Image 1 (cartoon, rainbow, N blue to C red):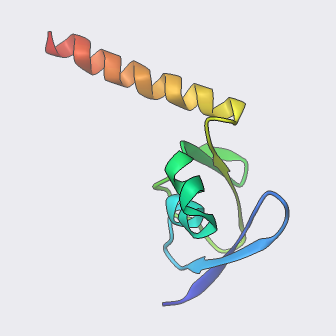
Image 2: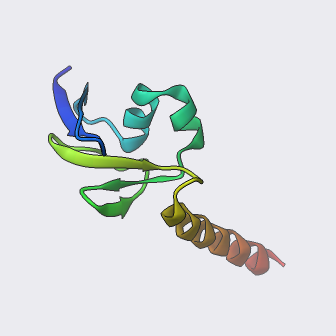
Length: 88
């Protein structure tokens, strides 16, 4: 399959399969990063780990150590709580 390049926060480039997701990128960097990934930023925009990356995209994987990840966790929790309330 064809390869594309993504740009990591330190400016280095990583070759990934065409149609790779942000999670695939995290997994290629390290299994630990993939396990701890919460969300990502693609070209500066907060995105889901299931979003596909394109050639020359700048990608940053967010973990719980990143302050921006807290808003993602809160957003997800609000959806879970709403579902729980609707069921009762």
